[in-house]
Image (tube, rainbow, N blue to C red):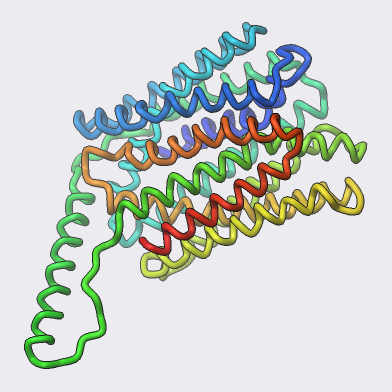
Amino acid sequence: MWRLGFFFHEMGFGLLSVFLPLYVVSSVLKGSLFDVGVMFGAGLFVAIPAAFFWGYLCDKTKHYKRFILLSFSASAALLYMFSLTTSLYLLILLYAVMSFLHVAHEPPKNILIAEMYSREDWERSFASYEGFTEVGWLIGLVLGFLTSSYSVSQSLTLLLCSALNVVAFGLSLLFVADPLFIFERKLVSIERSVDFAHRGISLASRLFDGIHVSERLKRENTAAFCCGLVLFSLATSILFTPLPIFASQVVKSAALPASLVFAAFVLNSAGGVLGYYSTGRRHDVETAEKASITRLVFFRSFLSFLLLSTTVAFTRTFSFGLLVIILVLLGFANAAFLVYTESLSMELIPVGKAGLFNVLVGIGSASGSFIGPFIAGQTGSFISVFIVGGLIFLGAGVFFTIF
């Protein structure tokens, strides 16, 4: 029940994710691709220290519910303010403020999942949570499709996003509760140290007995994991920040209804739901997660390069169909990647630094949200965006291989 509030929160931000970049370049605000990059980049850069701050604060106080409520209430209030302004610069400022407060729910959410379930169930629990909230995101995109189809005013669409966060606040107030005992992550840390020591003693004893040993005593390379995570989020943000605008151009050139832009991202979200569901059903995820992460990253790289074909396809209708298929596969791969890395991060990152995962993702996302639109705006084409994104995914795959 405690997840219900997050469901409606994701519904509101699912609608906002495609609506906002289109709103910035609309006739009301008259912004450009560069303005889209500045807005999302500013918001994400502000969220980087915020994620670490909220993560430290909630672990320090052992209170998690209050930060979730702060995030949802602030999002509702600021989205309402969005609907009252037609100034692009004020909108960017409000978005940056919202980003700082919005991220307050992320570290507490990860901690709640980690402390409510044992390590063996973390992957399944993260997959269950992400899959459930991804359905909310998907419904939000469907709402965007409907509001676009029926020409609902932009201010009313923003009010709908705000109302959904009000519902999220109310449900979280009723159902979210702080855990009585906080010890699971500490136990996992102790188990990792004991397991490493046990493997060392076992190898040493076999060597002393004259037994040939091919196994190496090696800890995970946390620095490589962090670098891979930053590069993955960087490449993802480079691709997805300007992608709604690219999709709108493909739809327009094919003389298709504008609402199909939302429909394409609905299917992207549906691919994510399928990815969470299939990952949560696996029984060997803990042993397979490290190898799976590398395969998923290289697969995302391949899909990024495959996006190039949508710019040179035989017909624009064919281009749109191919774009939709790629979006579904990107959503599936991202869902599985997120489950594996979230559960691993709770194991690798020490208590008191729960916000570090969001900081690392934020560094990449913030940089990419500016770089992606900047490249598209400077070159006048999305081809360079897809190439750069694919190459950075390859770099991320190398770091995860080292890890």
